[in-house]
Image 1 (cartoon, rainbow, N blue to C red):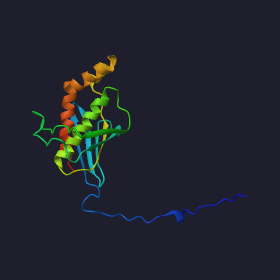
Image 2 (image 1 turned 180 degrees about the vertical axis):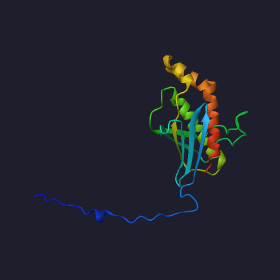
Image 3 (image 1 turned 120 degrees about the vertical axis):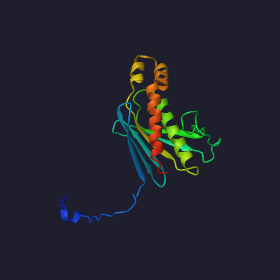
Length: 183
């Protein structure tokens, strides 16, 4: 025999107390810039076990990646690639996709390049940093990628990776990431 139980809504109430803190519990920085006419938001958060960076032009998470870099990179940091002001990508960085799908197959290599470079920026900004990095990427498809849609995947990828629009976006995103240092 089944009996019906009615819950008393008053019994479900919980006491909620607002706790204010002079500093955020999770250090967070947000930068929004316009890149090639597209609003781009970079959010960096420093958790105790990971650093989380979101780069979005679509107001969504997109693909999530994790990057881990050896605590002792094979080569010390140089001044960066000639004329870019960026630290070189580290050969010890391992990038793993956690969830999501890139806008097209041509974006797979591009997204991994973004994650590797962001990992290098984090590592160079905090030399003793060993926390894994989680990066969320949601980039709007570029005109150069649209041109390559009718091409073979390898040709579309090459068009995307070598386009001036993509290079400008890449550099602007990396500059925004550098401005969001929470590590």
